[in-house]
Length: 302
Ligand SMILES: Cc1cc2nc3c(=O)[nH]c(=O)nc-3n(C[C@H](O)[C@H](O)[C@H](O)COP(=O)(O)OP(=O)(O)OC[C@H]3O[C@@H](n4cnc5c(N)ncnc54)[C@H](O)[C@@H]3O)c2cc1C
Image (cartoon, rainbow, N blue to C red):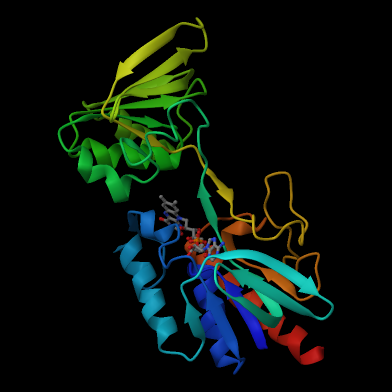
């Protein structure tokens, strides 16, 4: 029986893992990967102590720091978390682990468009990560679906090496920060289409186009592109919980903001998977710390 199982190897889970060792708990961190959202991020400029660092390098530093401590680490995806009287069972693909308390720090995943052709062409021209896959489209034409900050950052990054980027935004104006919008508008090889919605991804073996609808005229138009980058937000990863914790309308785990407690005793949650307002690295790390200290108190008092 472990004292604590932490699920997730992003900034929230890793920070909880470090504090678990510092509190001398018998802890286990289970994670699908040590990539998380930071692995897909570009340059990070708001992590104190690092004026500029690439997302993948920052998460690699976090991991190295965690590995200096004696929290046990296993790269296993968790399929289910169950509460049995006064302990938890955490089931991965191969093994079921037991613990007195659990911290869920499973972050978020990209939100799909759910249009025909999207699923079929993942890895064949449809991507959710500009940093990971952008370079494969050097000299080609691509569409970025989503005109919020992620979409605009992605379009700017792509514009450095693709021939042309078309940004599709459903609202009647771009939704990203003012300074990003200005930078996008200043780029000759970025075209912005507003008031449009994607209808289907086209292609044979690989993507060759994206059909979209103009919401004013209802007209359907075909765009010839080699790649489609989907940047329409993200959804919290809670499928392993099976109603074990209360969630808000957006599917985020509702936590007590002081303690990271969930609606189930002994189950804590931290970072972007929760209803914490700000989804940022520094916040996720802080929440991981809070969750572990609260879990420590829970374990000692039970
Ligand atoms: C493109 C992009 C750019 C960003 N830029 C910035 C920025 O400049 N500054 C900033 O502060 N923030 C930025 N963010 C936000 C930041 O990355 C997140 O706030 C932060 O990573 C949240 O950390 P987390 O630990 O809560 O979740 P995540 O980073 O999402 O990590 C979740 C972890 O849980 C694991 N996991 C998921 N499901 C399971 C399962 N079933 N079993 C086991 N493990 C599981 C995953 O493998 C992953 O390791 C950016 C995000 C994106 C997507």
